[in-house]
Length: 330
Image (tube, rainbow, N blue to C red; front, side, top):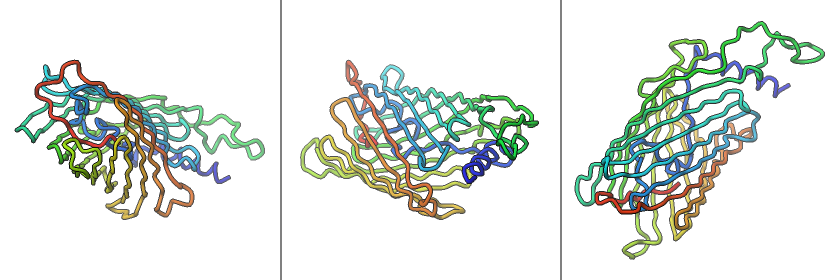
């Protein structure tokens, strides 16, 4: 019975878009999804202006039935001839065991401005095409219930259509030196409507992101093999506000990290303690993180899993105007 009630509640939340706002999916390993976090990061791969391709997978609260599974694929690369980088991004988010699916496809351009030998800025623009679909066959309504047999009756609820599509845009700014980096990004600039009913109030609010970090060498080599990198990320979307604070330790091919995520705004709750383990060897990288829930929801939603994997390749000829971006991989 509790699963039936939970499922019905999920349906109501999904369909009552007239009184609710959408919210973008998020990744714990936000630097492993660089152009999703900030479009200005397009073309900032670490292999002399070459390209990178990344796959990301997140399973949010798998201990609960029908929660959220998000996957992403991205490619980006720097090109001197266009004065910056380009990126392609695909994100797919599934809720309610595939009941509600959102798919976003984006094209990104970032313009590079090298202020001096050590200081560089980038300005990013993102154009996005979004689709949202609902599996009508999986929906269950009250008038379908037979007291003895369960959900066997046809419903009188009006059919609303399976899919909607919309355009969307985002922008970002990035500034960095060999040891410092920081940026801001604004997504959903035109606040697209995602309502299956066509209600003008059912929008996806703008998502504001600010992030910054430093790289502190732990040895005296010209190219240090060990670094300590404290980082912070702040995100605001409608009434939802959160801050991620933590650090990476990079020693040779191994990367470890520890984070704490706190929600702010109307609900000031500690959210999760995050542990990260990553490995990078030559062109390949792999990372795993676990979000240990520390809020009051921890009894049912114990944690979330996230995996990232990627490959980078160097440009055939190193761009003349390409300063390396010393950003974490995860």
